[in-house]
Amino acid sequence: FGDAIIADFFLEKDPLFARMNLSDEEFDLYRQIYQQMQVKATTPDLVIYLQTPVETLLERVEQRNISYEQDIPKEYLTRLSDAYSEFFHAYDSSPLLIVNNEKINVLKSEEAVDLLINRIMQVQSRREFFNPIWD
Image (cartoon, rainbow, N blue to C red):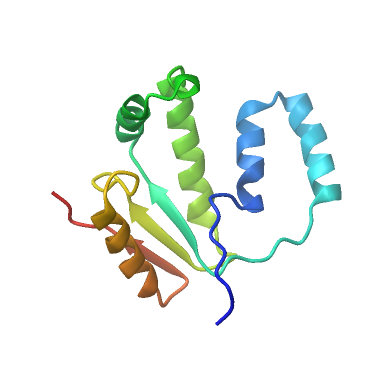
């Protein structure tokens, strides 16, 4: 076994944010630069998509109480959530675990972390779903 690297970012989804936040002109320039500069990043052994309803995202933003997050409009989160869903629906570069993150919060519960880690260790196919039962 090699060393595990855990990251909350991978290059393939970067254009998603660019498309949402740049004007058409800026995005065209971004795309040209992205294609020229794109490095061959290591393919992840597993990608985990924490799929969370927008209402739950808004509640968690409020609970976290980080000042720069408080003004994120619901419409933006809805567009972002839709873009992520579309992106991961087509994603096939590496194994993917889609987690229904509505009822669990790994930032608040050690039990939730353990549950998720246990499920990660069981992944055997290219695309799997995890819908944890949580009270």
